[in-house]
Length: 273
Image (cartoon, rainbow, N blue to C red):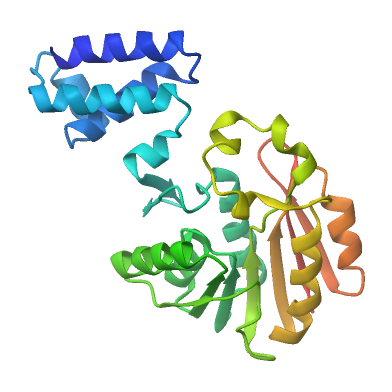
């Protein structure tokens, strides 16, 4: 079995299983199998796979055909130009969340101390610490997520303190200049409408906020007034259709800004205490 044949067969199997981007997925899984970059596959189409490599590739294809996200198979996801380790215990970082980083860097330039609430893989906390050099903290209610975030921080040389707690419970009064968060915002009533890769594989603790989808927004905004220093910024990712309600929660704050994503959908809201 050559690299070229493996890619052709893998692509066909994924197509038949209605997997999105079947060719790209086959390339990513095969590159993961033989521990190389995707470009290596194009340069060596005639390379013969070892039996163990074919067996692993077949297992990865089967897992993807069953709906398991590619990132949970490879245990990797790029975010803001850096490669983060991900497992099924954390939400997969999305490109849309990079807008939170961009807004935070713009509004809180020169921040000395920042906090990421519900850090998951640590993508926001690690990225902002490395980009700003600020003292960084992160919280997550899941010990599994906290451990993974700490591991990502160590691997990348980011100085991030991790606390296992509910939202901001472990953070002292008036201690940070910037709070960022991509909180759970999917209403539990919308569970069945999610893609199976999300609904069946990503952690529900990181997806669902409650019946309305605004439960975590309400708690974060309310407690942020205790944790932020005067003039500090709160930057939140917005779920689809959540702009008006979250903006209402921030009606007593200053300098409220709403940032759309590349599709023009309101994606981030920022406000100053």
